[in-house]
Length: 320
Length: 141
Image (cartoon, rainbow over all chains, first blue to last red; front, side, top):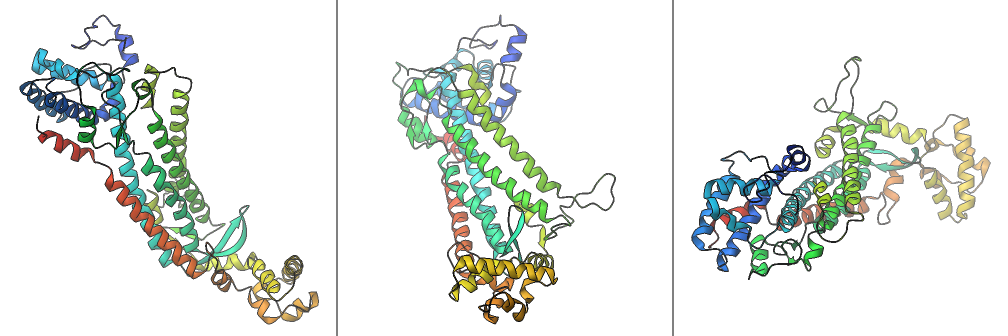
């Protein structure tokens, strides 16, 4: 990293305030605070066990890291969450705080934070998907004898049951399970430093076990510029929401007087500001609308990564 | 959100049934019944198409097509063939895997339930940040 912040660690107090404001990712980074502290804790445990950092210093830093996570102090204005945490540690512990960043770069640190974040999001998405699939199966069981037309070209085509529709919707989401599971970032990036590793006797394998990743990343130059795991998640999420948008489109049509196969409960029917008779399917329209955002996120990340030279490039800050 | 929404919609079987009749949606089933009685499918398809047009002219749903009307088109129409125009039997007769028949629906529901369990255990197998944090708080230095 050549751009230096105003923080204690970098000593770059001469940075223009406008440049700091332009370059800061702190606003979005706040969402990565827990991931950042967890990564630091694992790194610290390894530094202590390998004798790179004395145990007493490690204990003091760990206690302070946990205080930062509890929100004891407001995160100071820095370029990113990593420097903000380091500044808070330095205020509390002075020079000793600087031991934490031994054998580490923000490049491998952010790669780890984002991987931890994606992994957690995959777990949440898989549980949501599980509940949705269970609900569709249960509803299908109850709607075996409800008949309605299946459509081609949006023209009535052949008789099907509502159960068949529900199973068709479920079949789309069933396909989303495997891509989401596979997107759960299995490789541990920490320890590759800025790009080439470190001459200090670290133990990446120990950190991998502490953070419960399946394996280590293979090459530092690749690791710091790799956002494939985030692309995989963005694609899996976009595809799931694409499916949701198609279900929503059927639901919206079927709620109209022209189709009439579905009726909205009062709990979800929305009114109009002018037309007193309206019962609108806003909930399904919003689901359909929000799916566009997921496609935008995927496209945006693809374009960010496209054509980047090897190693870390600050463009990648746009991955959040 | 989608789940919350879908749990709060109610199907209208009457509207569904009406739409099925108005659309002569079981025409394929009638053609297939003819084909099963030995009429080549393309011929059966054309004969059924002619029957649908006659029913439309007479303002009759296909499921109530009179046998004599059908026989004016072709003598190979039988009461059994015309019974295939019933929507409910159309759904239950499609016994192939992935079709609308009851056994296929059983299999599809079982598949969704299996995928729900797979998704849940895949999610549970992913290490949680909360667990990592409490482990790392206590991890020996």
